[in-house]
Image (cartoon, rainbow, N blue to C red; front, side, top):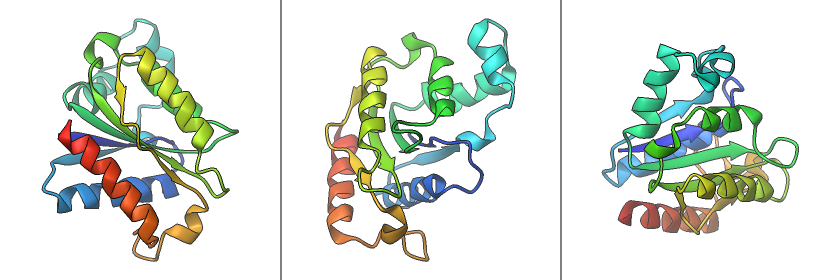
Length: 173
């Protein structure tokens, strides 16, 4: 099982569209996957789950979407030169012993030219600290509004080749 995380809590985000595109590609390859939209996280998890209180909804989400699967795809938009704070807060709620040795593919989304390269670097450092293996091929989806077509698919052949390579590496792990 592979979890695809839409790493923002913005409702109906472009990031979620990209996550759904990855879901479609993985399904076409016969891979079992699920999408977690961070917009569906419990609103109070930052003030409960991170500091010793039990939040049953948050615990269920982390078990189903993070601890049980062996692989992750994290799609994060660029917020202020990095990735969204909600994603960092979500990671802070993970039990480090339950995530070590997992594999993750990173996807950056931006309307600008960098494709959230800095955010993926920041996220790589945090995930490596948690002993999570990051696939070395990352997908920087820059100028995202020019890449996505009306069906929510990425219409650039070169970018699709990069995504295909990234998914090949993730699946073989």
